[in-house]
Figure 1: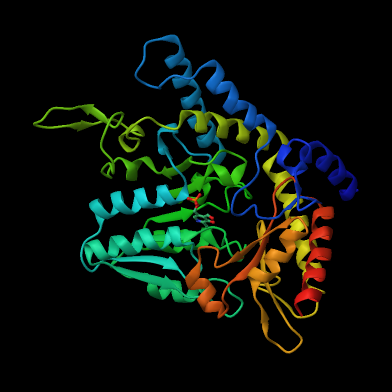
Figure 2 (figure 1 turned 30 degrees about the vertical axis):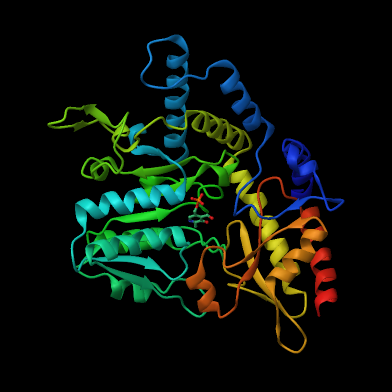
Length: 416
Ligand code: PLP
């Protein structure tokens, strides 16, 4: 029954992504690098051409027809983002260049307003560099202290240790909802609840969760959420920083220029209202429109339906990987959204370098990611030079997983 549903689902969706018909090294492309970036459906490609061909004009400052159409499309896209994550207000959606930009913007703005010497910020051992370095830079600027939630043996977050880390000096907790390296889903509701009990706001790095899980920021009660369009079938160069209005109102702008001002004089400049206060310069209105089309596309299928399909693929992949001798799956058995990381060892116990496996998979048309996945502190914790990560999206199939597993077994035979 489930398979039948899947076959229809594949037929319908796989064909919508033109790049999936590319031959890589004379093989059908099996794209399993979706945690890095997803491929784009025809609807999104068409949206970009349509926007530039039919209504391109700069937004917000024109009285002419095209400028008004462009402004309307851009603001409609903002509304779609707000609906996607169930934000209370459209003005809580700030367009950025991506998750990295969102987190840097927050670190700078929050840092300026709220952080002083000796204050503490908490991140975790499994963060992406984008959710480490901006906070580290802030701590250097302000002589604040970065604290790190350690992992338990099974690589899940040590929540007991987190409780101990929360102190009267804690000013912010910033945590990934889903680990980009391990794919595991962190207990973000519990983290938010514990932090809020101490009056500490929480920023959620949603780069890997918004594309895979249904996010409701009001239910989660997170104070900030960052995500990227390109990881959810949208274009590159666009992201979102969500923030509760009560916080965004308090925080200063980060960049100065057009759009973000109310009045400018050499004596004093006053700032625009939300969200424009944080959006200096010409925004990526073509990108926001195209991402809006990606969200429509996803919602036509249904995020829950996609999540069910991806969960099936991950379970199917993890089961098959576990049956290959000398494959070590990280965080095996823990609930994952979208990605599995592993390494391969020889019979004598030595590690086969993940790059070597990645190169041989590529020769067979299978695209996976190898290396530290911008999570060096986690890779160091695992005491390996890197891992192999296979990550799925809605257009992947069980057939893709079978092809990947056959290619992996062949690669291991060559490298063992
Ligand atoms: N955070 C996580 C968990 C990620 O997986 C990524 C990208 O892989 C980022 C942040 C950075 O996203 P971007 O490169 O789109 O800014």
